[in-house]
Image 1 (cartoon, helix red, strand yellow):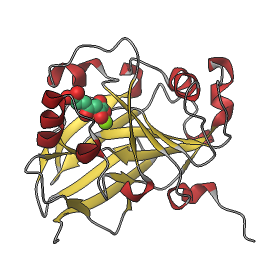
Image 2: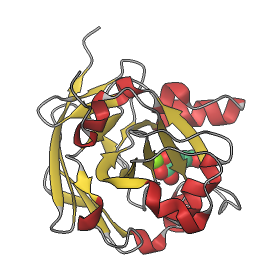
Image 3: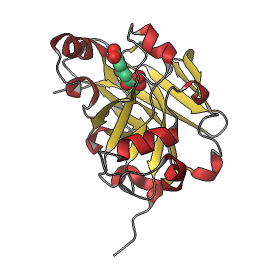
Image 4: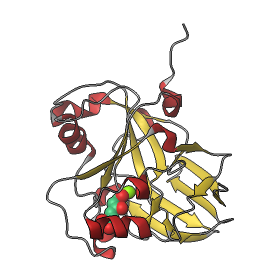
Length: 220
Ligand SMILES: O=C(O)/C=C/C(=O)CC(=O)C(=O)O
Ligand SMILES: [Mg+2]
C-alpha cells in the first residue's frame, strides 16, 4: 500500500473546519459583533477545488463572495490538545478561499438556520499547494492578499486575528477530534466582495505562495 502524502491533503477526505469573524475589521464590515469565542462551521471534502479547475457559482446564489484565509493543515491528530502543544500538531499551511453565497447566508442568519448551503457547496474551498511548516515560522505574522481581475480587494495580516492558531487548535480539539489531513480555515480579513462568472481570482501569501482561479457558472 502506498503511504498517503500530506502535501496532497485535499485528497484524503478529511474535515475542513472553518472559523468565522476572526478578524475585527471583517466582523465590522458585515455588521457583526466581535465574538467572545470562535464561530465555527464545516465544509465537506467535496468543497476542495485545485488550480486548473474553476470555482462554480451555485445556481441558487446571485451574490458569491471571496474570503481569503490562511489554512492550517493538521499533521498529528489529537483530542483536547493544550495550546502549549498545539503547534506540534501542525504539518503545514495552505492558502484557501472560503467561497460564500452571501445572499443565502443572510437568509439563513435571518431564519436562524445553519450556513451549510452558503458555505459548503462543491468548489467552495479553493486551495493552494501545501506549504511546509518551516516556510511559515510564525503563523501570526503573515500577510494575505486577493485580487479580482487584477484589482486588489483583500489585504490583511494574520496578526489581526482575534483567536490565534494555537488557541483555535486547542479550542476545536476539545470537542472535535482533529485528524491528520484535517484543514482549519482561520477566517478572513476585510474586503470581501462579489465575484461574477469569468472573473479571475488571484491570491497570495507574501512571496511564499500564489494561486489563481477562474469563476464559472454551474450548468445544472
Ligand atoms: O456573520 C456573517 O455575516 C458572516 C460571517 C462569515 O462568513 C464568517 C467567515 O467565514 C469569516 O469571517 O471568515
Ligand atoms: Mg470565512
